[in-house]
Length: 265
Image 1 (cartoon, rainbow, N blue to C red):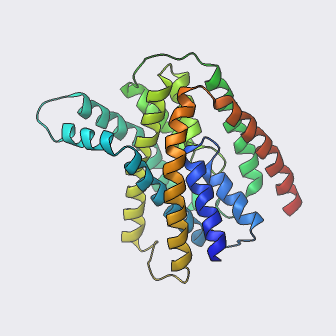
Image 2: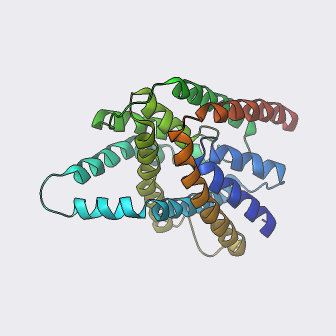
């Protein structure tokens, strides 16, 4: 993988991880358009590294929230921070189970399958359109809501389904406040990404002995910087109810992806 390609894909990941347009779907499109034909395992490695970068950018943006949350979790007594941490754990269960039992099947989808990406982007567009029509409330995410949102996160492991789009849309459609839905969506993915990194490193699936270390590092930096910018921007967009614009964008890119997919068949 060329350095320029790594920078472009890193920026794509950083921007699209937080904007509800599917980072995985855009990465697959980017790989095809840039002529990157890595085998699924190598392609998945680069994807995981970029997700790791955006997880770190989430920590930087929400550093105060995370610090307060950790202080509350390790304090005595049952408090709001412990309740929030429980919701995060509940939201992790579906994706953790799917990732554990169907990891090989998921990895096989990350090899430039842009036809699948196209159809999944249209599903994302529909979710965003429905969420944009939902009324704004002040409702907090409940334990049951957290698990249902977690199911959406598990489904969003498919390339083309936006993780942030699916989780925020599901949360809003369940009647939760849009700003609180965005905050929960961004924080709930951090433990999963770090868990994935640790698991793959310990199992030997991710090794530092790579012929593309420079590309991985450059891609990581590009994703980290663009991720911080996009995360801050996305919070403002959700508060101002601008999801319909992303719905239109996902629909258009989805149609183009389907056309492109048939062209490459």
